[in-house]
Amino acid sequence: MQRQFEDLLLGSIELFCFAAELESFTLAATAASVTPAAVSRSVARLEERLGVRLFVRTTRQIRLTDAGSRYFEQCRLALAQLADAEREATGQQSTPSGVLRISMPTPYSHYRVLPLLAEFRKLYPDVTVETHLSNRNIDFADEGFDLAIRGRAPDDSGLIARKLEDAELVVVASPAYLKSAAKLETPDDLIHHECIQFALPSTGRNIPWLFQHEGEESELMTRGGNSTSGDVLAGATLARHDAGLFQTYRFVVEKDLKDGTLREVLTPFGGRTRPFVLLYPHARHLSSRVRAFVDFLVEKLRA
Image (cartoon, rainbow, N blue to C red; front, side, top):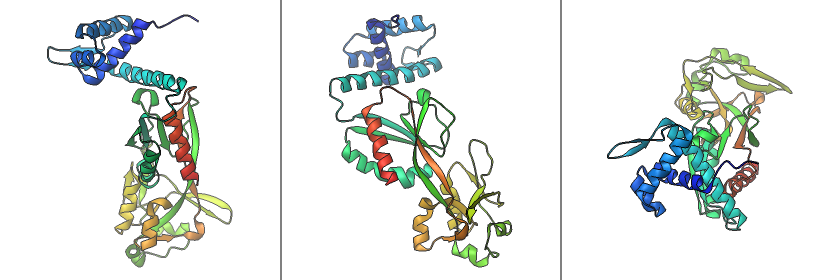
C-alpha cells in the first residue's frame, strides 16, 4: 500500500478546518496555539495540492469557496471519525459523546422521535443531538448527517437500513364534515367526498389511499379540492377544520380520535401500513454515539 498522506498534510487539514469554522486565520491560530502565518501556509499548501482555491480572502475576512465548503464538510467528518477511533482504541469512548445529526420527516419526528430525546440524553448527556426536519433525500457525505429516517429504503447499496416500524394508516374526518357529507360505507363511496390530497415532494404526484378487506389489498386514487405537500401534519390540520377526509398515520391523529376532534371511518377496510426505516452509511467504524442512538431508537419503537 502506498502512503497518500503525511503528518504535515494532516496538520494542514486540521488548521484548515479551524479556519473554516472560525472564519478567521487569526482565531484559528489562537485555537491551535500557532501563528496566523502558519495557518496561512497550511491553507496555501492544501490549495496547491488540490489545485483549487479554498477561501476567498479580503482584508477584513475570509469565506469558503464552493469547493472549499465541500472539502470542509468531508474533512470535518474525517477528522471526527479519527478522533472517535482514537477514543475507542484507548477506551475513552465508553461514554458516547459529540454531535449527532439526524434528518427525519416532520410527522415522524414530532410524534415518534422528539418525545424520546430527553430520555436518550439522560442516558448519554455528553451527546448533543441536532435534528433536521425534512422529507427530502439527503446526501450523508456532503451534508454531514449521521442518520436519516425515511418512509422507505432507497436503492443505495452504500446505506444500511433498519426498519423501525410499520405505521398503521387510518381515514379520518371531523364530526361536522361527516354530519353533512354523503354516505360512506365502502372506499368506492369516496368519489362523492372531499378527499384531502398529499403529494410526494420527490414526484409531485398525489399518493394513493391504501385499503384491505377480507385479505385483499387495494389502492385508490381519490379527489379533492385541498392538496398539501411536504408535511403530512398539514393534511391532518385541514381535516380537523372540516375540509374533508384524510388518510394519515394513526399516531398523528391518535389524540384527536380519543377526544372526538376527529372520527375514524371505513374501519372494516383499514389496517394497511407504511414502513419507516433508519438509514446510515456502511462503515467499518461506527461511532459510539451513533451506535448508542440506533440501539436506543430501535428498542423503543419496536417495543
